[in-house]
Image 1 (tube, helix red, strand yellow):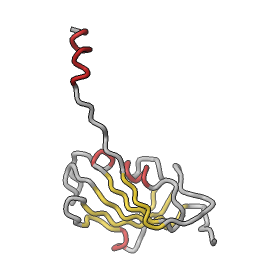
Image 2 (tube, helix red, strand yellow):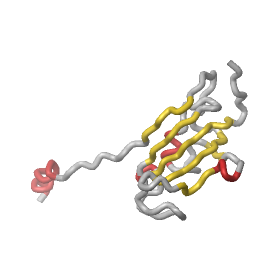
Image 3 (cartoon, rainbow, N blue to C red):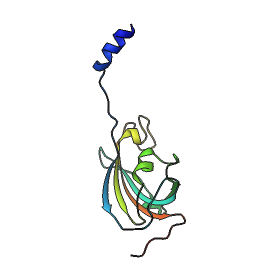
Image 4 (cartoon, rainbow, N blue to C red):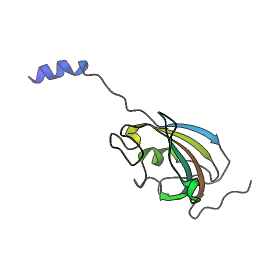
Length: 132
């Protein structure tokens, strides 16, 4: 039986997990970029890749979201996609389900959705924006 399992392993298709795609829409020079453990403030607009429907936006509330990067407080795609940013940088993140909400529905977000976020790093706690 063990030999049969070993022989059949090559026949099992390998599924490569989709990655977060990052489009750098505005970049700045700075001496200190965002890193794991930073408390950051991020403005964002979230849409569904499938139909472009907006499901949430901090801009509409006039208040950026504050969280600590790399602590699992937000979806994995944000913990990864918002690293190494300067204050004022903007990025468009396309986040596959594996790095978002997976196969569970979340409010207006259907299960298995690829998410698109327009993000803007507004601040990093304890870090002043460089004036270059």
